[in-house]
Length: 296
Image 1 (spheres, rainbow, N blue to C red):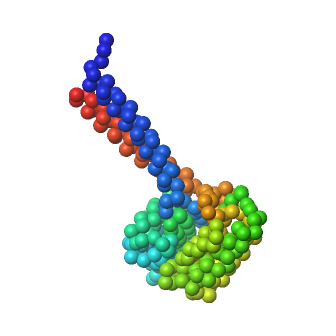
Image 2: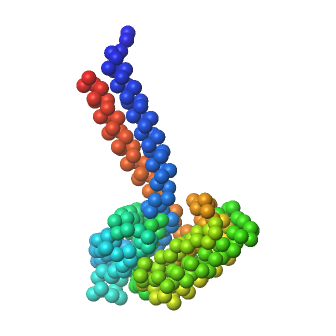
Image 3: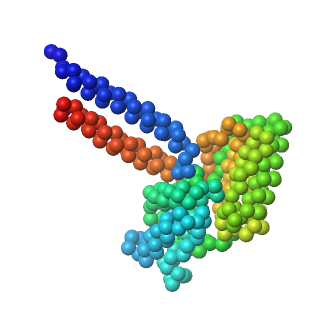
């Protein structure tokens, strides 16, 4: 028994739609690899706050203030519940976007970071999260303006090079453009600086509330940590609590191969959420096509 031509045509269209959706989905995954929302690291305190407490209310107000301010400024710090200083109910926090992001991109990144923070560090009394394009942090203890040079994350490529030209280019980027430019620009461009020399490129940034001398000291320590821990790696990132430095050889900006961070759950959460959203859209689309075929 032969099926009507219209049914065969619908089946062909459904099959084509399935193939297109798979190809588009795979392509989107590849394109989004280096998006500003790419997870880098997170840190969550072991201590938790209880629901319905004044601290939770202050924290919710703080996070809402962050999301609201991001379209207008690349860096801001906040205090919520200042009347309760010293009794554990006050929340302190900040966000910072990469210095080259426009306001809309900064706002989107901060919203993404806050959403991931709530999943990765649910009910944590203190938490921080770094994405490719922005950083968010909150705490129940006042950390704002307090010097902190602790290393929170680093990654080093497994490939390395002892080539003299590469090492000269790397050192020129780290010692010149990034150290001097990042410190000098702090406050005017959220301490962000990009530089290059020969085959090597790099970026550096300090938190927006660091004075130029403190920014310079933080970047110098980050460079020292980077060289000491990653040696002659072709690409390396070091994040201290208040600044970061990254460099890479041309064509070698890498995904992590050696990671040292406090939490990598956020990457998994982001992937799962993305897959579920894609599947939901896919199911609705196929259902629509099937109904269209039945009508015919």
